[in-house]
Each structure stands twice: as structure tokens, then as C-alpha cells.
Image 1 (cartoon, rainbow, N blue to C red):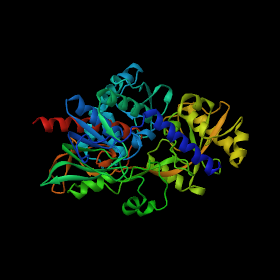
Image 2 (image 1 turned 90 degrees about the vertical axis):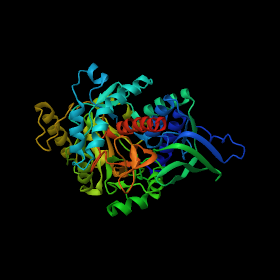
Image 3 (image 1 turned 60 degrees about the horizontal axis):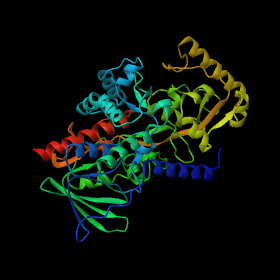
Image 4 (image 1 turned 30 degrees about the horizontal axis):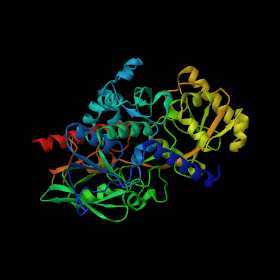
Length: 482
């Protein structure tokens, strides 16, 4: 309903602001006589949450670390994340009176992934998630607000105070730490090859923005390049039903790490498990955080009716959305939801939110039957009062929707997360096609597979990248010290 050009322009502005927040470094000049060779202990490919977490852990252990990043600024997909980091048993939860445990988090994650997950990886993830939050807090991050995202039994999604978008806070926290530690980050530098012989890695080959080849000799390589959600060809190769889908991913998420790893014999797992996010803006793929639903919004179709449990898993909600007229729907919420979540102010600023002083006014702007929408909202408010959703069984209804103004955002599914990737073990070691670790090669984050199984729960990815990023950094340290 908004002009596409306006949305694209606003999205570009937001991306620019994001890059300014997290900083932008020029490509580093190799400190060698011929300018084509660098030596270091550890080279990390990718500067999202996983890569920066790995780099910090390795540097803190006394290793020399270089990070290469093909984009012009750090952050990757992490910078776009809005929901939160799932962790159970944190000091933040305790302060808020929330009871939770790693065991419940494990059970939720396995159930959410339809038990296709690697149990060993899920246990490492859920056992270490709370410590990841404490670590980020110790680095000065603000993760003191806790909400609930779909598929979680308890409130465990940690985010900045007031519910502000979590990704920029993660990147800012980690980038500040890398600067304080003096970690070298080479932006606009693309890794093109992992150098390996006889199942042992010895560095990488990269190119700077001018096409100059840089050979980085390293005793350990950590892959943190993200998934392939922005690679339309690769997506369709693994799931032909995704032909023509938009994506919530940043342009750099093209599966480079997967290609480089398989070229030296790495095994893959769960590649066909590709998740769509149900609430992306159709015209530009901008993701609307699940926290909007978690804080009380409902989903309605063009008949003014609810059509799904809004807090069902992402695949279920996406499928229900695709069954509606136009294959989109509307997030509907009131002023109380808006006041509860800072992220909504960003959406209003972008011009993607439609509002009305009354439900009647909003229905008119949406071209939805007023009586039907009023009846839907009244019925839902009744469910909130009774505590029982008589239509779809939603078990978490934090508030009635009755405070003027009223708001709506048109949303539909877009490719969001690739659950499959490089096979790793619980030490973040990359496993080859014969089932053995590739010596000196580690991986973390969305470039890997196995943690999320057939469906990723909202809030698990951000925690996953920090947990396994840290594990990769520690494992590389242990490897070099032995």
C-alpha cells in the first residue's frame, strides 16, 4: 500500500545508519614487502556475531587474529536481527522473576526443529546460552529486556531495554570489544579459497576490493560467513518451491563459506531445511520482528479474520499466510503494543505502518469489512479476558487490543534462515565427508547445519552464533596450544 520506491529509499537510509552505528573500516594493507602475504595465528572469515565472538575469544587467549569481511562494514545478517537472544537461567531472567532452565530450552529447540536437530549440538548450544548472555553483559551490552518468541515455553528472548532491535546492539557490543583488543578487521576483502593439504588447513586466499590477491597464512581458520539466504540460485537448487521468493537476508549471505569448505572435503547437513519468516514486508523483504506478535499483535486476512495461532512456529505461520488471498496478511495491534516495543517506532519511521484513530478508520484504509474486523478484535479481546483462545489455541495473550490508535502492517513470507550448512561437532570443528575433523578448520553460525533441524525458533539464531562463535575461538586456541 506504500510506494515501493519510498520503501526502498527508506531501507537504504536505515542500512546506512546501521553501518554508521557499527563503524566502517577501510581494508587493511598487508604489512609485508610485496603486499601479498600475511601471517597470523587465526584468520576468521566473516564479521557477524559468530565471527566477532570467535575473534574476541581467540585474541583474549593471546593469539594473533585477523578478520576478513567482504562487505564494506561489519555485522552481516546479525545487524538485521530484531527479536532477541534465547537463553535460559540468566541473571536477567532471575532479576525479572522468570523461571527457566537449559533443559526446557533444549526440549523446546528439539521440538521446534522436529527432532531433526543434532542432539549433541543442541545440548552444547542450550547449556552455554546463559553464559553467552552474561559474557555480552560483561562486555557492556544491554540485554536487560526479556520477551517471548514463538515456540518457547518461557520468556527467554533477551534484547535491549524497551524491546529495541537486538542485532545492532550485539554488533556494537562485539565491535567495541574488537577495537579495544586491537583486532585487525579487513573489510571489502573477500575470501575465495581455504588452503588445505592432506586434510590440514594452512590459511586462506582472499581478494581486496581492487582485485588484489592476499595470501593469509594461518594455523587455524574459522568460518563464520553466514548462510545462503540471499543466493536465489542456491536456494532453488535445494528447494524448488522457493522460486521467486524474496529474502530478509543482507546481500552478502550467498553461501561462500559452504562452497569453500566443500571444495576441501567438508560434509554438509540439512541443506534442504530452509526457513521462511512469515512477517516480512512484501515490497522490500524487510523483516518485522516476531516480538510484535509476542507482545500482543494478531494476524488478520483480507476478510478481517484471524487465520492462525500467531505464535505457532514460523513454518506453520508461513504456510497459513500463503493460503490467504494475495498470500499476505496484516499484523494488527494497538497503541499499547506500540508503547511496549521500541522496534515499532522504526517501522513507523519507515512508513510501512498504516494507522487509524479507530478500528473503523483503519479498516477503511485497509479496504477490509469494518464489521468483520471489529468482531474479530472483540472476540480476541474476549479470549484475552478468559485466558483461552477459542479459535486457534494461542496460549500467550499478553494484552487486549483496545487502546487507540490502531495499527496494521502488511506482511508475507520471505526466505529468512538456512538451517543447513557445514557439518560440525560440539567443538565447532568442521567434519569432512569421511566423518573426521578437518585439522585446523572451525565454523560457527548460519554457515553450519545441525543446530536448528527442520525449523529454527525465533531468538535461537542470535544465541547460536554467539555460543558457537565463542566455542570456535576457544577450540582454535586449544588446537594451537597443543
